[in-house]
Image (cartoon, rainbow, N blue to C red; front, side, top):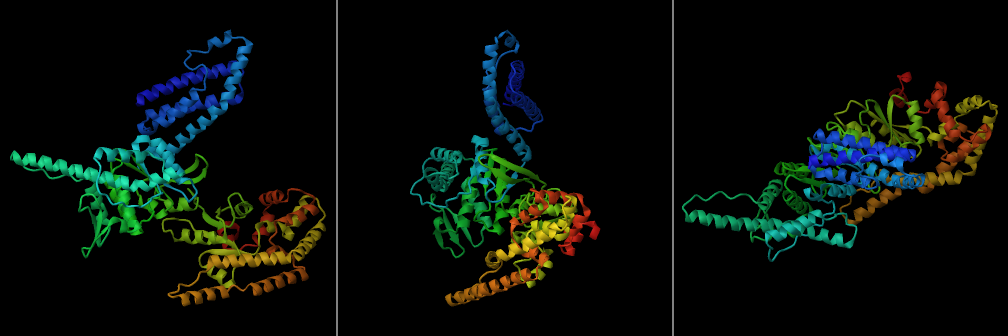
Length: 635
């Protein structure tokens, strides 16, 4: 198989080189020439990978398929050389040029698939060990599990996250050849649950798994009895029976669950037996107990020397059982490679010898951004996107590429800046990171102070979470000293800055009702996220606790306090306080008006990058703990 693949690639390279020469001779586009060159180069890489022993036969077809699709677009594949082109007339050359150029988009598409596959298999270590692929919900794990089905074909089984735990009762069991065929067909099916037909298959899957376990067990028992009779009749010693997959299933299940065990006393129906001897049908078992039975049955019946892909291996399973179960299954199926798709960091860490990869992002239908994760740093590098970082971390609000990230990266160059969403995300990430015992770096969190009580902010300091005195990062650029520095750079009269200040204060006066209403709405949302209703043991307690919870939401008081505060700011013409409380991204238009520019934010960033004094002006808004953590000037 390997030799055939190498021969195929060499033939493909010959065709590509000939078409590269033809394309050049007839004047094809640079895009066409470039993609042919790239495909030739990638083909050479594939040859080297195969010769180095990186590729396994199981997935070599994926590369051959895409390369075949590329070769099939070449009109003169199989030709020995390109000499015949010189004998053709201009009209022929023009037609062939158009044909080849028109095929370029198709070649590019298949090239990108080839490139992705190669990168993907390199990231997962070419399946030289078990693999754990970690990704959050929405990162395409389930789609990736279906992609694996395409890669693996008949060489493995995909255990879907869609598990319908219906345990049937059987009146009879078919012969093992029939049940084995049913199982194989079930293993090959799409598990994405995209339509009613697939959902119906999912409903039957547990039954199919159990039927084959039972059929194999019955057949093995009959065979052993027949052989034992023959040995007995000839006076020979009866051999010890071999364990069937059903026997192994019971052994593993019973070793993990205390105070009960499962058995198959009538030969065709599985029952659970409690410590007191009470027997009950498997359908009455808990979801966790059922899913253990399902997973064990699936894994033990996976193809020999194959791949076992498990989407969400932690689903329905208690933490105390999860690691033990998969340790047992890996030990039992050492002939197979396990590929886990999970978002559970504790489980991922428990797979000590597995290759760890991180599904960073997913673009429909089949584009994943995947990062390699060092196996000894799984929680840190995964959860916080800090692969290889030796700096301390600043978790802040906002998103990747946001103004927050850009400004903080300039002001605190000695910190790794990580925007993680809301203030609650900042709090949770900071606490979680600082609990890790295996890292040499520290995290601090930075949130705005506008919607938190003073006592709450004080308690957060103990967790290395600090606040800064401005409502939006963009408002930093409206600082009076910063504006004057920009005006000076732009050769604008400094007096214009007073006009900016007056207009900003007037704008707050106009919008104070909206600003106050938004403030109260946000404060309510924060309260719901940061608090909870105390547990009640009766209806009266629940109602009382809910009322206590609700009574702390003082909308009228919050509104009155806030609007009075804004009115006082306006009355006192307190500009610094104005920009500290005013949530309005449109304020930059006022600055642009008087500075006579149209790109205020970008000019502010450039000024910040180039001017140390400008940085000092803005750093003054931040607490000392953040200053000293992220800038040696303040250490």
